[in-house]
Length: 244
Image (tube, rainbow, N blue to C red; front, side, top):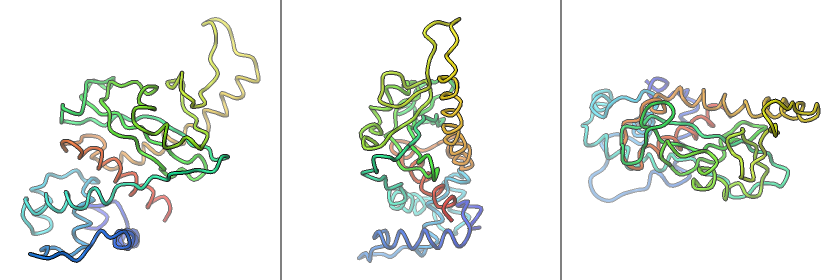
C-alpha cells in the first residue's frame, strides 16, 4: 500500500513524516480529531502517484470522500517543495519547462501537445540533479523565455548560473551558440561548447521522465491551485527518492 500510493519505500515515507512533523505539519488541534492517523493522512495526500479519484482513495483508506478532500486540502500545501533562497556564486542550475495536461481550463491553455496544459518551470542542481525550485503555474501556451521571468524562477535563482536550451533567448540563462545564418556552420570551439551544454542539460530531461512516474503529471484533474501543489509536492517526493 505504501509504495503503491506514494511511490516511496517504507523508510522514505518514515523520513518524510519526520520532516513534516519537524515543520509543524501535525499540530495539536482542538475539536473533532482526524479519523486517520497522521501517517495514513500523509499517504492519502501523496496520491499523485496513482492519480486515483477521491472516491477511490476513500474506499482504500476506509474513510469518506469529504474527509479525503479535507486531508488533501490540509496536507498538499505542506508537502510542497521548499525552494532555496540563495546559492553560492559558482552554483550551476538547469531550467526547463514541462507541460502538464490539466482539465481546469481556467488555469490551462491549448499548447503544443494539442491538449489544455499548464507550463511549469522547473530548476534542478546540475551536480546533484535535485529539484531546487518550481515556478508558479502558467498557461501552457506561454513561451519558456517569458515563463522564465513570469514564473519567478529567474528571481529565485538570481545568485546562480542558469543554463537552458535554445528556447530561452533574451534571458540571462546560458543557451547554446546559434548560427547567424542557416547555411553557415559554427566554428569548432562553439560546436564543442554546444556538445558539452547538451550533455549537462540532458539531466533535466531525466528529471522530468522520473517525475512523470507520478501519473498526475500526465493528466491532472485538480482545479485551481491543485496542479501547482501537485507539481511542487511531486518535486519534493522525487528529491526524497533521489537522495535516499
